[in-house]
Image (cartoon, rainbow, N blue to C red; front, side):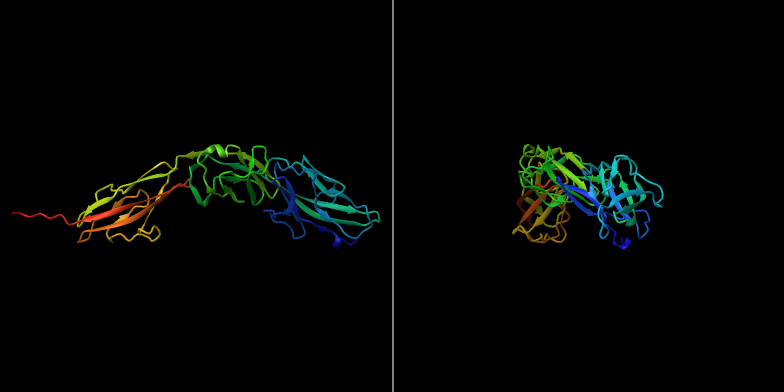
Length: 325
């Protein structure tokens, strides 16, 4: 058998919602010779029946694989928990522990006396770890820009995340809340947490690491807004703390935006006035000479997807004057 006919299929095992697939391994962080192919797994990954990682062609049937050290001299074995079979299959459970990388040589022989060898490295990355605080949302809200509630460390390369039920089966949030493959949460927030009680997430990485994480949901009261018309005096100073809207409910970190009466055009306040996007207050001197009245729309959003809006009038009265009879 011609050695050049031996091709190493550089694969790592990955389980995506129970479906076994194979994806290309990442390159090991340590320098690796061009002829050394790298298999990268995550500590704790269950490879099950295993995956055949070497392809052969040519030869005379019945190939048998054997594992040796990097020099190809002494017989070797994989770390405890993993098995390398005579069929060239790596199976078992990837052991936990600090990150390791070991170079091996595999030798294949056939019935016709053919012999071929190939080096490969086995890299084991730290276990996949997923943490999340209680996920705080606003009842009836709409999350348009995905929020990222999960912190992921360890593992091997990119991950895939999806909703599952507590038994680990793929599931959907009944409210229309969605979770993209990168763990971004978006969509409509339900009116209460009951609809989300059975949801968990399953996180899978390229090295076969899998974490099933239960979730804690906190659905705060809907965002509500009370509007008060603002009345000021031309030539005066806006009273401290003058806010035309008051907001209740929601999930903190509210942001205010001011628009013209059409609700879409950015508001054009008198040049001397400002609208605070953090607390919804009007500030500044009223540097206008004449009385006027104008309607504005204010919209508020919070970090939990809450949305509320209302209209108020900004009335500028005539300048205050003093005369003596």
